[in-house]
Length: 345
Picture 1 (spheres, one colour):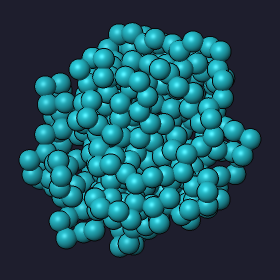
Picture 2 (tube, rainbow, N blue to C red):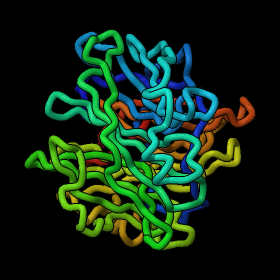
Picture 3 (tube, rainbow, N blue to C red):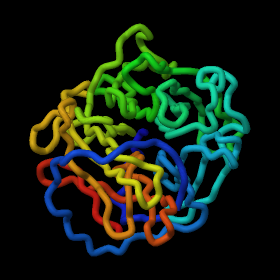
């Protein structure tokens, strides 16, 4: 998702439902104590039900948008859209389409809803990547839709189905869900994806199509827990000060107050890796530095994205019977260039 560069924002917290999954992780490198922050967290209002949120922060007076995993009883399971004039009050704007595309249903029999969108702006176009799968299986596909604008009132507004980007089958050792997009220093786009199986994979894309640059190329391997059941997913990239930062979610989501998701990170000077954590351990060998984990009534934070150094994620509220909630927090970069999130609880 292309950042829109605003001034750093205050902490934000809010409410949701969704998908993606995993089990308890081994110990990982923790960052230093979080910096003190005098400001009080924002409180969101309106419709806050957004799981696996993909944030596009508004700039120059533009609206903010959050795209999220679909629900069967809302828009036939299609990707949900919410907007806000300021990042505080959110309105449900419906879904990208009224029906899941036929090619998706053919590629993934039994699919009920579309998961974990990613929205990235390039060349005057918004590219929305999304996943289609069924729980616990790797017969999955990542699809693409494009739009010239995110404003539904604009005459040019239309989400155009561009079809499949990549898929996985039961005999593959990866799972084609949870897309995350980044451009390298030359402007070449790359997509990370993955959940369980062999962990996080990466493929080179092509502009302006947004599709695979080489459909026959084997996906690169960039992160692996090296511990069954390899509970790592939801890759997302942020560039900062010459590094590519790879954020992932470890653990199991979607279990209400029993969820144990947490947000981890590693970084690399090269987009293709190797990614290492704060202690120098490779993410391909089980490394990872903790960014955010459970605290107080906040359980299982994960499914993250970022825009303008603002991170969006969902979590489960123990004080509300495990209801899923949305949070937005500024990313703070420490003196060593590692990302931190101040605690909203």
